[in-house]
Image (cartoon, rainbow, N blue to C red; front, side, top):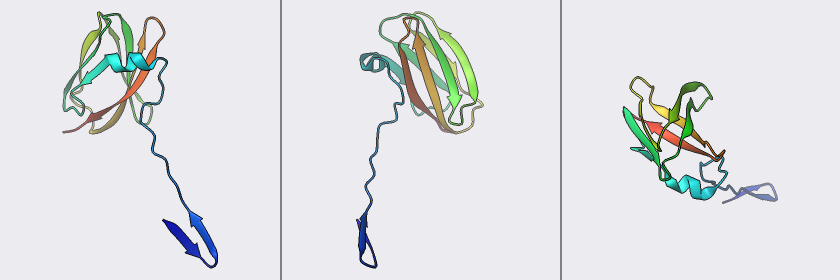
Length: 107
């Protein structure tokens, strides 16, 4: 929508980009499943090749909440006690591939 001030017309354009902030191999992100999301307490994280990976859960402010090793491609996290809000899940596979995704906690 143009904004008219005196004799000048300014047009503001915004672009919305997807939340995924970092992906080394897009096909790997499609293989990773976090459910349920949003969650209230428990989540399951899995990926299809059944390998190992390191998982890091951080708050949106960057505070470390939890580190965990995923063995054989699946793990469960108990998020009971976490404040409602947005969190960041980072998964780094043993081959160096990395995916970052959001997790919403609701009560």
